[in-house]
Image (tube, rainbow, N blue to C red):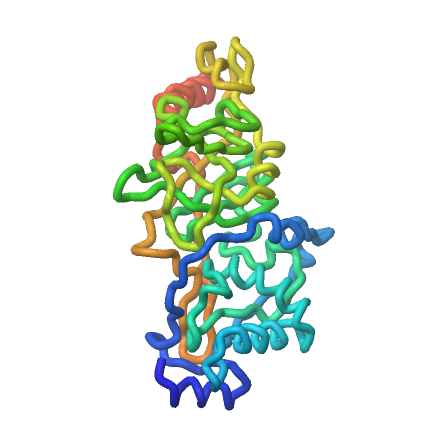
Length: 327
C-alpha cells in the first residue's frame, strides 16, 4: 500500500475505503496468547436471540513517522474509545477475527474491526446461529476447514464457536466426512513426538479411532492448517468441548484409548468435517470497496447427507435404516 494512499486513509480517520485488491491484509504470522482469550470466549448473552447483528470496517495500522509502537498505541486508543488498556484487551478479539497478530502486523496493513465490542463471541460467528437440519440432534460438532473454525450446536442452536488449525494438506490433512467422538483423555503425549521431545496435548478427544485423529489444545499459529492431521484448539475451547461432548460407550468403558478394545454400544457426539483447505491462510472476510463482509458458512441441509468417514458410521447408518424399515 503506497504512502500517499496510507496518508489519505489517515486523513479519513483511519477507515480504509479501499478497492477489493488493496483492501486485503498482508498476512503476518504469529501465535495466539491463548489464556488472554478466556474472557472473550466465556462472555455469554442470556438468549441467542439477544445478540445484535455486527458489522465491520477497515482500520489502517499506521503512523506517519513510521514508528510501529506509536502506530499500535494509536490503534489501541481508537478501538478502546481513547483508552489504550481497553484497546489492548479488545485487540485480542480483532486478532481472533482476522487470524492475524496485531503486534506482527506491518505498518500500513489494514485490519478488519467490528463496529461493536464486548459481546457474546457467538455474535461474530461465521456459522449460522440456528442450524435447522440439526434441530433433532442433542449435539453436533462441526469443523470447517476453509474458515479454520468449529461450531457446536445443541438441538440446532449455536452453543459455541471458535478457531482451529487443521492438518497440513501437504503432509497429513484432516479427513473430511461424518464421524463421532470416541474416547477422550485429559493429557496425552503425541505418538509423533520426535526423539528426546514430548508434544503434550491437553483435553484430547478422538474422532477417528483407527487413525488417531483428535481435537486437542496446542499452540495456535495465526495462520491456517498446521498440524499432523489432528485439530488444534485454544485451551478454553478445548476444555469446554471436552466437558460438553459425549464420548462413545463400549463394553470396555468410554473414556480412554483402552475402550477401543470393546464392542461399541452407542456412538458419541456427531462430528462433521467440512470444506476444503484454504489456499494459504484463511480469509474470514470478503473485502468490499467500502467495508468488509464476514464470509458465512453454508451447512448441509441434513447432517446425515455428509458421507460417513469410517466403517463405524457405515455400520450405524445401516442399523438406522433397518430400524426405520422395521417400524
